[in-house]
Image 1 (cartoon, one colour):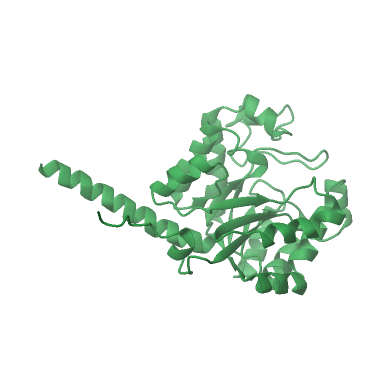
Image 2: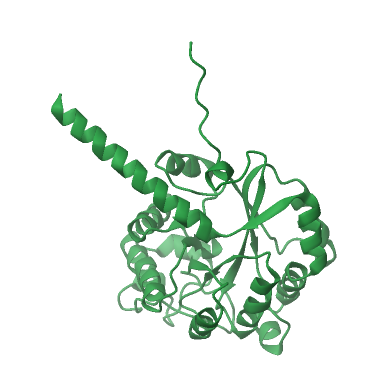
Length: 303
């Protein structure tokens, strides 16, 4: 009996050896406010972070657009955003509240919690708003690489996930996948999605965050691990918006621009990559999968 052919791992498909430990650090919430945008250039210049996702509905989205145009290092995806969680700092739909009434509260802003969003959202309106955010990113020539989800908007609901998946496929984007069965289903269709995701957590006290990161990085397995981070520079604006969590964002900024962190990753043999590499592979593999399917259909038609 012939030996079973083992398909190549994601790291091998990306051109790395099978034991490579690849780390994709994604700067979430880009464009959220000025203090977050101020962190972008130094974080990307430090070299560890090669991807971010932008909150298209945010009031500071135009500043992000200008920063990206000035800095070719900044690769971005779309942080699909349908909640507005801060008490005194709100945003609403790109599509317009009249087109997506189930997504907004009485003041025309997105609902404050993911639970309220999930309880009220009409799937058809979710698609309208997700599409509007991707289209706006394209209109501003941001060349998005992937989509992910602010406050779990599509991770927590299968219908919303399928909406996001369909749009990602339509626009040639890959996506963040958290739930393993979804990841495996998409991989069988040729999608290039990360092996695992590590979330930064506001539940980790400030004094324990460095060890939290270092321990998770020490334990990285071969493959591609995505690490979510939230960075910002310290400012009165940031403290007024985030109140109890501003210091966590400042810590992330300091940690992921630190030469000590860069040395630590090098000593561990960890290689940092970005979503732009996954998107390139994703497009190649999906196109190949589609060609194979088309060939099978043609062959079947001849029998």
